[in-house]
Image 1 (cartoon, rainbow, N blue to C red):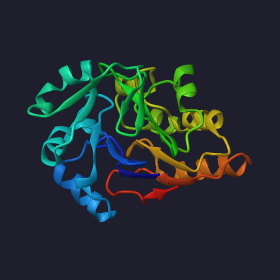
Image 2: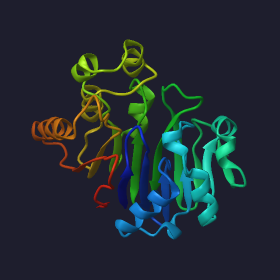
Image 3: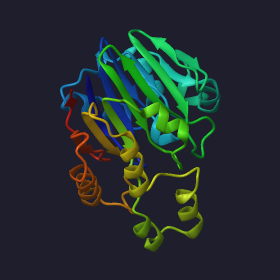
Length: 256
């Protein structure tokens, strides 16, 4: 199993996951050119990708989903509501539709798209299951529901949002309305909320962890690294490899 954060943040998101016989992108929020360049820079072949899975219709998640799918002749996988909302981006593209909350098979994967809370029409997280185990991804969610927690349990690798430091957000330059939106149930998870979720999900089979969707204004990678390492040092359940998703460069390829 391999996982690589090709981009993570408000300007574009793209996660590469390779498991069993299948390789997918979760979201494609960069330009097509940048997506291909970052993949090739990591030794990943875009020709080998089998599908682009879309979490929701915001531009930082779908910017090149359609163009990537058309260029490499693969499907976009999205809910019916997201397909309708983002129809302009998916023109002349094969789209495989699903219903949020209903798992389905794709090649050797069982894909479980579970609903999350965000200010989008039908946002989902994903759990990808193969013979090698499970990989879970949950970003752009304002609150950790019991369903989110249950869906992500037992994953070998996790891509989790750690968007903002609450103090930096409240003392920062954003207008009050935007601060309230980010903190709301339809906004983004703070660093504290992300670690609280990680506390619930920690198990001895967790081998890789990507801390994702960091705000450039209201967070800092060094702070996320420090708090995550501190959390891991204070428990003896798991010792995953940890990377911080970056807006401007791909992470290392984590292979487990």
